[in-house]
Image 1 (cartoon, each protein chain N blue to C red):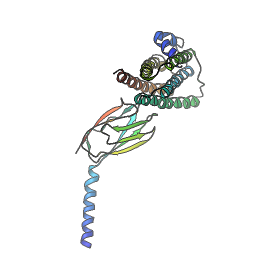
Image 2 (spheres, helix red, strand yellow):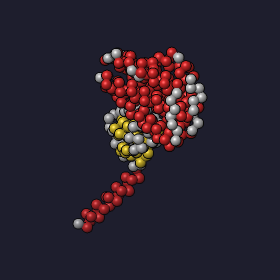
Image 3 (cartoon, rainbow over the protein chains, first blue to last red):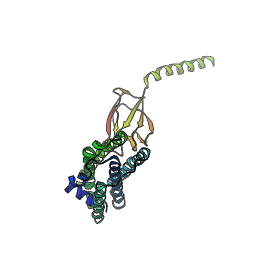
Length: 172
Length: 105
């Protein structure tokens, strides 16, 4: 349920979702980054419950593990900085898009599900990387938050490459 | 008895002198989803200590299957290089993290 609109909104109108949060503050940036992680974990859990492909499951397990690690770190950081993550239009559009995508994927099964899940993971990570590079990292004021976002970008880039590779394998 | 003891002592001493000089221990850090550059010259008997400095779970896994170390965040592990040749090492969780080691005799 969580991924479709997300994908649609970001792919069809990539400027729109993020334009609403032009110059987001650190509390909003933290919220967006955290939300992006939560949504990818939800998508991975859906894949773990629906897929029977070992490679897809390995990938999904990796998403859960890595995004949870980043989010744990993010939570610890906002606590330390005494910042309350602030909900915002970007987080909301990410969530509603993801919800729709998850509903769409929910109707698929077998290889069709695997391909659609992985294709969405490629697009999702690409979109989030774009947001990190173009909006979130440049606007982050706190050095530790910026550094965590940069770690996130490195991670997301690796995930994107992994997903692209997996998509090619599944297409064969 | 005495001669034998001395003999063994000499052998032990000789091996102590010979081996520690050869075997080295290297530390390779994993940071920001990448393995640090491996040492240029590695020899059979050398130890590599992998240290995971990331907040993510990694592994140091030989493509050949000769070793497979689980490396939770902040943890490390040792591998003693047993065979000469080229080794491809990757992370099972992040297969695009990969690098090569060249092990000399």
